[in-house]
Length: 352
Length: 110
Image (cartoon, rainbow over all chains, first blue to last red; front, side, top):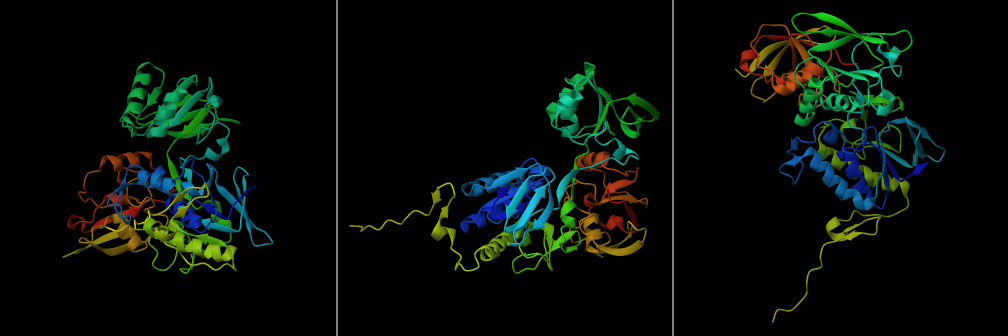
């Protein structure tokens, strides 16, 4: 069981900054995120896009903002449970919470702050009739262990980096790799596109473009797929395969949090604007995941919400402690790792 | 004149004739959101970067619309429920040439 003061669900910019504000109050944080890396949308969707409305940064790339936040919170030694989705929450008799992920990792904290953004990123699934029948029976949306495909016949669908990269990788593992994409053009790193071209020329990857998988067949597990060539001369091909891996990117879903008994409005969690607490005392929601009158889904608003949330969380954890907010310029930043940053003392010296 | 008329058929099949401003630097996805013709959180998820297809719509009238950019074309090639007349609302900047435009919102991706 992982124990912490504030359990933050979602490691996007708002969740990361909450670690800093909590750290100033000597509260420890642990973050859970369904993605394998911190940064949320900033890292997953648009790391190379500039943001122009972060106060003090005329222009900052989303990926750089995340790097900076990680640097800023380092002294407060946050814990991370990455690649796991927060699944269930249980309120204990003492008012604290146990949050369990889809992989069974348990986290215990008196305060839970949901900084879940648009929700957890789930693979986009193609609209095929009997898709669910073959899930884990030949159909997979993520490749966890490539060895599973050793000497198997694999068909991959998609036109982005992950479709390209896995086609390249599996061409050395699987007995046969077929890549199906609706267009002739792929959107990916130039290296990857060129490499796939090379492997296609060598006959190591079968490329079917423009084409689309329109049917799945098999008795118990997947045995073949039906591919429709969508060029002028339409033709359908039945291809015998052991595995079908659709890689159509990820889309955010509020997911299990929807069932936590929180008040939901417009696909977001309702909070008050005093301390961003939800209808369940001790559970807060900050950043894009919350809603209140006048809500704006901006990173800078998430930072503000995180700050006020931490003050309230402190009061909740230590109801009897007196506290006044201290400027970092005055108090400096004392990390849990023993580091201390503070403003240099002015020199007091006579000028003769 | 700074407003144009646009007809938007929502995901329930209900038709709305609305006024869309041409002077507010808005795109079609934002217009749909401003009139709340689709629930928040189901449209414009990526914010308008052509990185999701939640604002996909079918263009029903025969307006000449600006050509698709690479991002839009790539996104639509990965999206579901795509038809020949599919566009991403976020890439359609509201302009006076769009007066009378008629579009239908594509179904929400499950």
